[in-house]
Image (cartoon, rainbow, N blue to C red; front, top):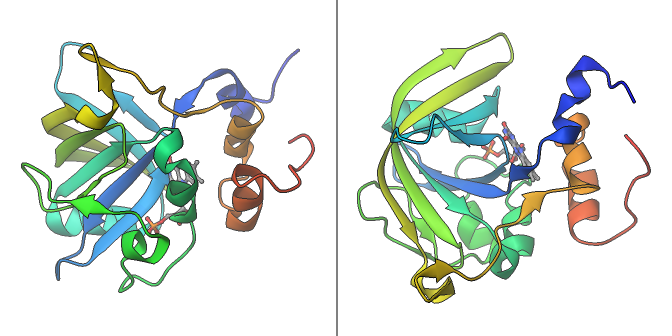
Length: 191
Ligand SMILES: Cc1cc2nc3c(=O)[nH]c(=O)nc-3n(C[C@H](O)[C@H](O)[C@H](O)COP(=O)(O)O)c2cc1C
């Protein structure tokens, strides 16, 4: 079955993460991000792809810091609620009831129920007409001890798998549909 060029994402499972940032006044922001990837295994670099505009991107540009919170079942539903479009002065973490703790190396907080945390600083940005690829240098990576067993992560990270990942075929911008899909209402049919 041949796909349209923009549908290649249907074949690639993506992680479900929430990126936490703070603005110049210290107000926290949170948003789900699936377009998150390591830059080669031996390096301490991570890339995230952001649409324009995003409060997340604005804050990363302003403060140069972000935390990638790796999401699994324990925080999944609340994490998805952070996709709602809140005004910049609203702390989405408080709004959706996600408890946080201070990070080790950066100002944005960690989500307590995340499976793990990747704390990073802005290394460089590659900007296109309607996207930005943010490359971060990882300062600290940690698995949440709450979900560790025998030195391993015992809880599986959530992936944007079928039927969810065809959200990336153009639906992630529609927060109402996203919420319906993730929170178990009527899933939309097909692409
Ligand atoms: C599961 C999921 C994954 C998402 N992945 C991305 C992504 O990789 N990049 C992006 O720009 N937006 C992504 N979004 C959309 C943003 O999370 C959403 O637009 C959010 O409101 C942005 O918040 P902000 O403006 O506070 O940064 C995703 C949404 C969901 C539900």
